[in-house]
Length: 91
Image 1 (cartoon, one colour):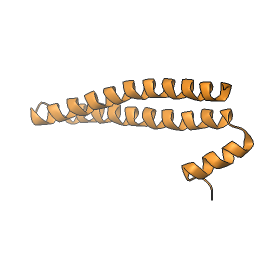
Image 2: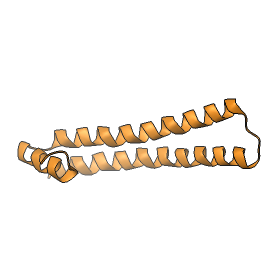
Image 3: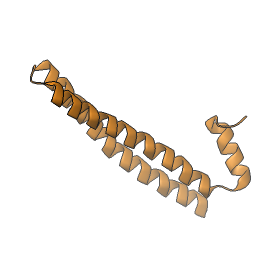
């Protein structure tokens, strides 16, 4: 029903966002690797590139966590308990 549709929409939006961020992360990692392999890097570039990589990793993690929060709000009380158990958050 409505809950299933909302969950599917949430997951589709999340996957779209994370795919985009993941592609950016791969590109940033490749840029760092290329800079090192070509020996065309200095300390400032290391800082800039690794900061971007860290930022993308944080955005991906935040997206996952926000999706879990949003999913929990779509669930009824008994579903929330089961969800927490399945996710390993409760015993």
